[in-house]
Image (tube, rainbow, N blue to C red; front, side):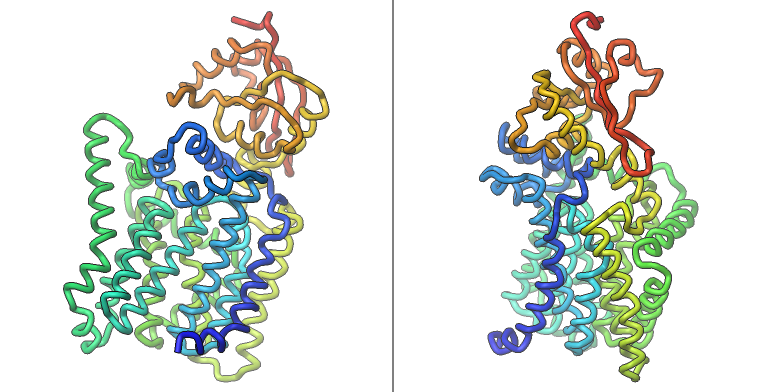
Length: 496
């Protein structure tokens, strides 16, 4: 039966693989973002110093652990890391198709949902970057599908598969990945009385939830012990603590709601956002129990973000987007009987998504970004623009001086931008011998290494004490001229 279903769907899968696979094209078009560079450093520390637990400590272990063996084998590390993330995005597209077919019983609607996800510019630009969010998105969809299958037929095998899916999703990004453990309890809210009676089997429920519960308990216990010792709790919990502290819920909710609407409109545009919201609302009101459950699980993470987050990036919204697009297509199908109207409504987001995704692949600065995302990925100091030009300058200058950076991210952005044939020594002064160095000490350490070059993600502030000890060499502006990668030189006579 499984082989027969696979043969029937082979054409759909091939089409989705082709569309989703276009994201592999020109993976270096967007220069390395600062967070990607830091993730690369985690991989280097694992390979060179055996610090395999560092990615776990910062809460994003899966992406580093998967990429490290491939980086060790050789090749362009940025392309290797990004290729794995595009592969995760492709898996997310295929999972979207399966979930949509499950909840809507329509293979055409499932294909429409999956194509929307494959072409969605929000998905495309994040899967083409080595960031944890696309792994989290794929993990969310994997838990969703395995929960639906367990819901349909609860047995020990499906419970074990669900338990493994929950563990995998948790390891994509701590502590956010633990939220998916709520998917199974929410099933009891929407299941029919007969299904509830069938699901209430302690042994199967234990098999499904025991692994993730054990992991969560271990993480909290270790974090508590570390906190009592005056250390950072680790596992990404420090960031969650900073996000949720010092803000009144009413104030946070209002500000975050405005920000959420702004960011989703920037990614999807008003026609798509309104049609999607309309479709999800219809699914909640008139849909079957699977559609209502799917809409709630899609909206639940956003509700948590609205309530507790203080500062957040638009990429935190990603892992609910496929679920909400499924709900949108399913909602439209509930009330629209005319095939031409359905096709027209689907063509609106498809054409816009295809156009924006093409720009993201071919010319990222020309694509439409929200103001905060354009600053982060294109024009501001975190973006990778300017480093390729700095790398070319250094390689052509023939300089044999080492290049220092005061931050890990800056050093790794330059390292990822250097051609393989260019032998320039890049050193970071942020973490030395495993010890984080305070900012002022980094400056002293740099001057002790003179003569040397210094690279900064933007020009030094006029009040920076380093200005008196270094000479400006060159600057490389980012698109929009909001920042420029800058090179300086210090000589022996500049020692303090």
